[in-house]
Length: 525
Image (cartoon, rainbow, N blue to C red; front, side):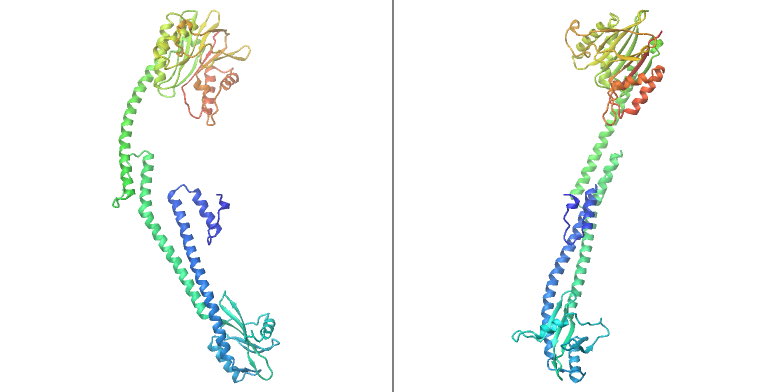
């Protein structure tokens, strides 16, 4: 239900109800919500019962008013019927005046049939009495009644101030037809109305006091203990594992039981976290050792020093699933290897260790890229039974013919920049990832390619932690962006280009979710 469609509660102003409704919907505190709802219901209850009492009593007052008005007018008419009124203030006029005063009438007019004022008496302590504009019509109505329905007076009841306006035909003399016009206040009704206002005010005050003390009781019994629980929970969330919900648990109700349960849970959490922290410290120490061991596999760049190697190697955790290595086989051939095991952390690091041990054994037998990749894939499958996989690229550099021979086992395509033309090309994937197939080595479908290079050409190798890294919007860094950075900075050194990559990554990546490796080589002259 929309707020502008909400129906106002009878007796409650729309603005007040809408304000309560808006605060109730936007509040995120149960205590505030209940306080607002309780206040609204208290106001509605007080107003509802006050209005109901007032309306019922007003109905009774109006009925009594009508009854007392008729009785009072008849009494007045009977008392003054014996007096004959003329133009002069004689003895009958004085008696009539005293009779009216006895019945509480202090102001009145005596007029003739032409609405001329014959006599006028005013009470100096009350507001001035005036003749009604429709006096002529009232006189004609009074004199024109049939003999059967003829009455000596006409009355108008005002239920707002409980007054009676009446016109009474008097006995005249000296050829005068006089009429008495006055207003009577029914004192009994007015006094009862005042008493009603007092009773309603008393009921409102009592309702406010009752609801106030009940709210205080509710807060002390329920919300104060809930607040202690909330504070203890918040402290634990901030890292204070010794926080407890402490109060005098003398009621032994549900909240006392909840407090004891919370403290028991908090104690167990503290013990568990303490144990886990100790285990984590031991694991962290082991990972630090593992990182140091893994770094032993990382080669010195001296073998490719003339390639002006620039390397960025960033494990997601202490140990990495990325691994690379440089080889010098003889005076003619040098080799480079880059692999990325599936996953990250300890399991991926163990896979890379297995890969490197196998690779070092294989290159002692052959350095042909296709044969190396085939043997590596078959050996990985044999050892790990297709439980872990890895992508890899292996190339050898023919220094005599200025040529690169490579085989790419499912690894993100490295790309190279041709200085002479200013174009970028990719070293395409030439086979599936390592360790997937359990076919014999000679049956594995891997191929190779060769690329002639020239001095000044650049090669960029990377893992998918670079191109697949995402920003807050879920957008990847992409291979196209990596290529463009190389094009835009082709005149810079390898290290400067690497710095541009790192700057772009830091500005793009929201949170690293994989190991990151970037290696830039420049073909020497």
